[in-house]
Image 1 (cartoon, one colour):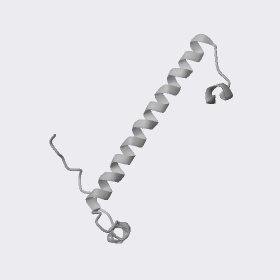
Image 2 (cartoon, one colour):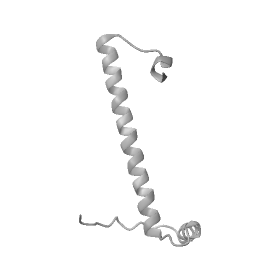
Image 3 (tube, rainbow, N blue to C red):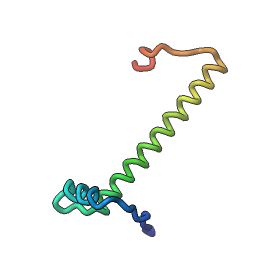
Length: 75
């Protein structure tokens, strides 16, 4: 698999120093940024899937008029 780079992000020097201060002993800024971006992408994907399921459920309710109690859903 080919690799690619993310665009450079310009930040204030103080923020860069703060970031470097929280890195693990062997952790790099690049690894930290990649981990953060992966987490954000996963969160957005999960959020979009949740919204899509909610939209389908709403459409199903409008079509059938049937709904379920929250207690039934959680069971």
